[in-house]
Image (tube, rainbow, N blue to C red; front, side, top):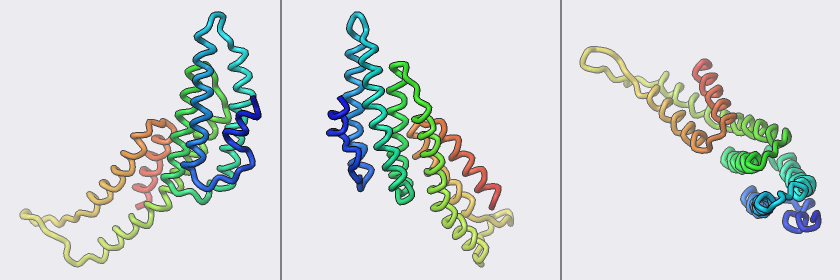
Length: 191
């Protein structure tokens, strides 16, 4: 069985892109889930086969994903990190359907969430600073009919944060949503 997993997802292969890795990992995940379903459908249930799959396939999958993250995680852009996070979250949800919980997968979700938020922060901060610098230097601030001065900068900032949050919200990963909200809160406090 181990050879089957290694053939499907070679342990020593240097994956160049997230999509290729996740495509192969998804095929392995689907095979595991199909096997789990079949093992639970028969009478008596074959939980021993699920345990065997968990010892070999699951550990192999985690090893390949962990090694990829160690080698390439720093170079991934936020969207690639989000793809890896979404896949890991979906995999964890699939495992839970069968009563399987793994702290390593949970920790991976937290680490990927943190990495995504940090990468997003590094991209959002310069944009926020540019908006604020432009606003500070703007000599043509508009005045409304009642004499109040107004600017579109807060609206632009809110729009940018809202659009960024919509991407995160669509993934439905609680840890990621909370970390992103914390990032936005810190950004607003900072500026």
